Length: 215
Length: 266
Image 1 (cartoon, rainbow over the protein chains, first blue to last red):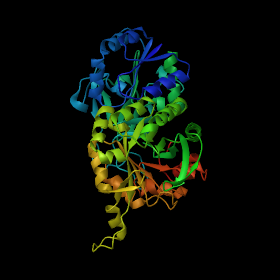
Image 2: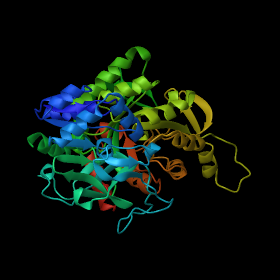
Image 3: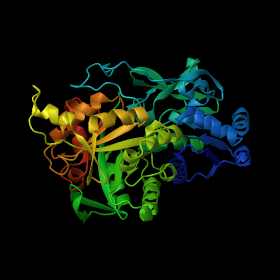
Image 4: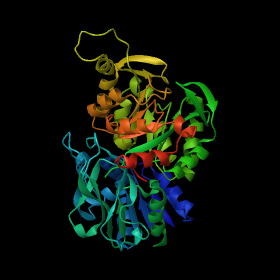
């Protein structure tokens, strides 16, 4: 059973539905016991970092999440669920789970900076924040089990203003360019996380989730 | 590189898709879920559902619709119309909706934007601005009438029925400060006309703020998409009738834009 952790941070409906659609048994839960018993856990979430950490604390879910990760059970963090794996965030100066070294920082672009393409189209916009919409992922670790059948350059759906900057570059499974090249996916052992939303990225996103189900 | 988004919009009334011009003469145009699936297949980047006759009693219909759409379409979608409270937003997000669009309630209580952004994150809070250029006597200014009327654009609420006296550019900047993650800008002058998006208005709003702007209202030809995504500085373009009546498909639009050198997902 895959436990999808419900901590009041939205987006749960779509994640649960995506997994259910591929026949996986899921439980959307805020109960630590259910999380302990799960084979895999998914931490979705959009929204504010500090609020997310506060909610996880208040619900007493942090020990269960850490324990599952330490016991080697597959973990999938989506968006905020990727960010909180790191030590801290600029967003509300909050502390994260600290499983990986590094912090979560905000996109900062000076006004009038052009998109970093070789030839920006006529009237290219300034880079807006949030980074919202479809962007491509550049694969860094092609042997990552979740990327099986997901080609380099796949379009994925992003919505975020902050991104994780891992200290350890070897965990970066894919990157995406938005003004800068940032880590859009990480993988280390049993820990997988994406900054994008596979559950909203149609076919190739579903492929990635299916790979997680098959682990 | 981030792709420019092409977004079909579905106007919803009592759980059905409807179509009309300038919010009047509505015709039934099918089931929202069936429509969503077609657009999903065609390569729409996102979907917007606007509940144009939202009322408190019928809230549940919208939540149900969002749930049904999320059951089958694994793509981002936004629901707007009649959203008043943090609880409305939470229910929609839990139903599987990615973004909510707030219009009238944000004008009536701008702090709702701030509270919603703090609680759910800016990325899911879209503020819809229905703007209409005000017809002024020619000013003494040396600038053209066009520039002048853009700067004097006024925000309308209640589905375009009620003028607010609020300046659209100032309001756009204010909602950004309050934490809105995106602006859905509809030109009421162009909506339903097929004369093209309001380019001066869109570029004025898009350059005034640092959040993405979805342009809406007036699309009738393929060129209109190109115009609004380049000169109009829009991050996304929304259209309803051209897609709905199959004047062209989303795939055609994207192919056209791609050939013109615009970054699109296709």
